[in-house]
Image (cartoon, rainbow, N blue to C red):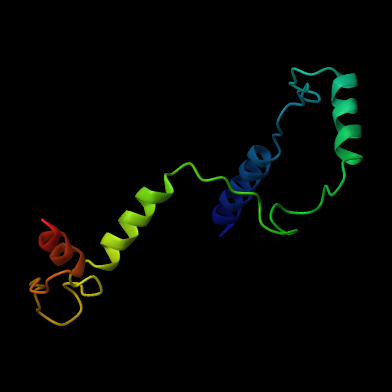
Length: 115
């Protein structure tokens, strides 16, 4: 019993010695910045005095939009998509089904009639 208590005390002292080691102090980390203190201060003053600085984008109405697409082309694509056969049917609409396009599109029949 005396031997086991000596071994336990030795193990406990070993754990205490290894746990007592600490890291060395390297000092305060130096800041890494490309701007000078005066430039950072001027930027902070501009940001603090900016109007509506805490208002998120779009909270005061829609952002102005300018389209880059041709309106006639977009309209033609919309008409073609609206007259597409089986446009609201997908192969997963019903169990074990296949989509077989049998409908004649009004746009296609009008185009064929005009030729």
